[in-house]
Length: 174
Image (cartoon, rainbow, N blue to C red; front, side, top):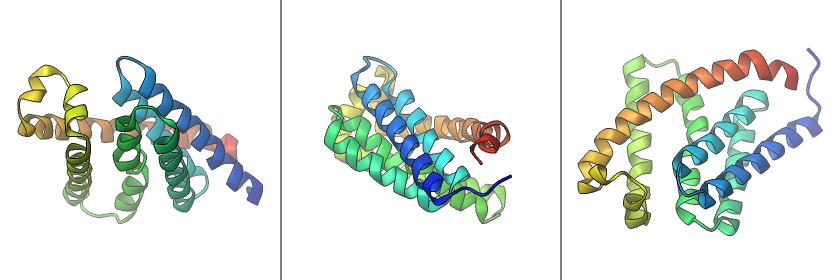
């Protein structure tokens, strides 16, 4: 494998940032599925982390977050990306690099998720409730309970996507 040039180390995260911004924008204009589309935008940050560095992932996340708040009409989508889905790939990378016991790893990830959900709830509670199914809008504890379960499934699926990316895509980036 040849080494990446410094131009490639800048260009690849920039391309991923542009694609992520398009997805966050798309998530703000589609009538349904905006959480899933914003989550897909967050997955692109993992590409920057894997192919370049964790610093590139943070830079990519910061650029998309700022531009999303400036350009995206639905600020809930921008906030979901900035607080949760865009930041999570770096948090996941840091936590999993520590080689902690699996239970501690999961606990730290859940603490991150619950902190992010609390920020979303405090800043955009009414908009967040409006985007959830009606049975979840009855109480905050239901949102947190189901949210934690879905987040664990998301983390499991995200790990699979990262493995697929590392095995099939990353080798062509180098």
